[in-house]
Image 1: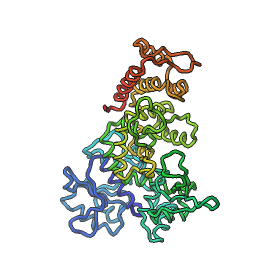
Image 2: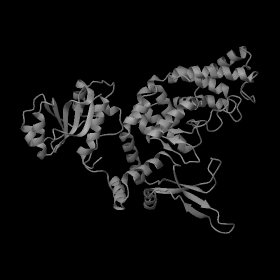
Image 3: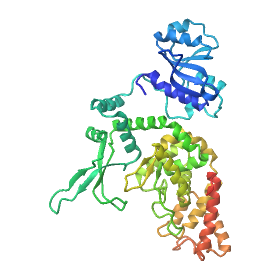
Image 4: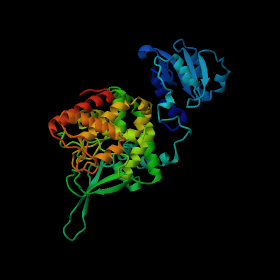
Length: 477
């Protein structure tokens, strides 16, 4: 995108047109002339020019606009924002209109589009996107400073933006180097990653990135002493990162829509909201081992002791407008190991498109900007469509299935999920009548239930969980 307001608006207007089902092109040449139509709208088939849109055209463009208006090829001309004085003196009839640049409060242009649109979405465009029409003609000072730093050093701006994007989405993505032991007495020797791009080295020196040392800690790294580049904590870096991520999601909107269009709405909702944008591919775990640490999606509740995780969860909760209890339940659902293959394919689609960010090679992870995608794709509108009864039923049997797992606090889990103990006792009694287990034991017992036939007990719970998951997500496996 360029620096002027008109240049920045073009992509937003083109995206709005596509939202309503039009085919739109930015900076479209017209009849071999040197000047171009800012945004051209084409009819069915994408070949015949239908509407010519000009964004705050300068006075010297009046002659070109006049020629376009007299062409039989163009049916309508729309000028957004201030119009040249010569154009204003033209007779504004049905095929030439001037309207305000659209936003949430200026809706004339969107109503005009909707009246002609081949596609009739249920929601206004600006309620579906986080990207707004820029308010000023110049980029914010923090972005000007960032871009000037990179260009003055003769480096690639897009590569520098990609470094910020990767570190903003994934904390362990850019391997900075490794500390090698020099001996018993000497300090460790740092060996920087030879494949590190110059842009990352520059941003580290300029303070946008900082080094984070990470020992093995059982995370699967090759050895202790690995070091990574992560975002600095200052406000300026946060602003730069937020704008770069927002712009990246906007520029890749077509890929996001294509990926999500291949899945049912509620699967998209649960996968993005429940995962918080994080997936760790795993092979299928046996039922005896499932729920042990990493099983595809991190298992968590809002009551977690990890303050950072709680902050991320609550940000997502506020983004899509659900309760803490509902998020806890959705996370339980999306943590179901039997969904791993579906989720891995889903997240890999984002990774292949460049939107998803892979973790360091010793930590096979995939990250996506979940909050931005949830906002952009208006997932909040699906929150009222959640099959709460099936979700509750899934969590009931999920809790029952895990009741005898080592370290699993059954009654705390029931409380975190807001499950009714009477319903749980009823489901357990049904299983007890089949001879699979005992009835629910009193609080204070070593285990909440005694399991008599592990195979039949597990199969019964899993069958109920599969049925509920299929009903919620509209998928089968």
